[in-house]
Amino acid sequence: MNQHSEQSTQPQADRLFVALEIPQDIKATLSGLQSSFPGLKWTPASNLHLTLRFIGLVQPPHVELIRQSLRLVQCNAFHLVIAGLGLFRRKTGGILWAGVRQEAALLKCKQQVDAVLRVAAGLNLEEESFTPHLTLSRLKTSIPRTLKEQVQEKAVERFGTFHATGFTLFRSFLRPAGAIHAPVERYTMAVV
Image (cartoon, rainbow, N blue to C red; front, side, top):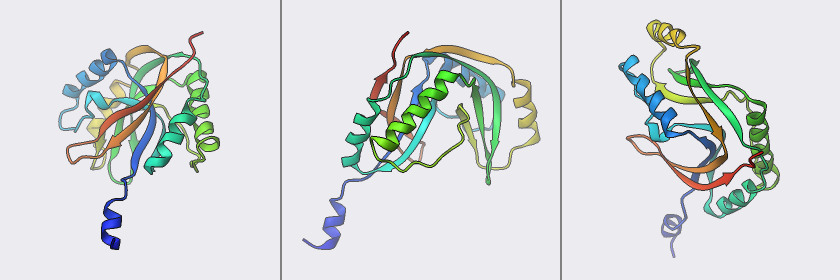
């Protein structure tokens, strides 16, 4: 077998992340904000989630180890409040986001997810600051002043509350029309 055909039979790496799924009513409320922000490319409601850890590209044989490792996470269910809008600046453009109140239980769950991915799955994960948020829109140009003003007007608005009872390992497929997120496995938290 020549080298070219060997490479073409190599399985493609999976793009993985761990996130909390958002209830449909909150997704609908956030999607309803689109009319207040004309001209922005909005994240489809089906893709709204709260990322706990972006893992990145993983070869298929390692995916099963990650699935098994995440079963070791022992988090208690907790309430989350989605409130306020904000902007992250990036080198090119920015991100419009809905805020998530930083609850101690959320931070503990994120730390446990990171710990099992490092120890049990053997992943070399970078330390990262954790600012819980839901990405509503990615801007490809600099952030206009009018957008900053609109965001400030909704900085304290509350969009909903929900009870987080589990987290999900997702596989992300990048497509020209936008990413598609498919659940790989869902994990249940203890209800206390």
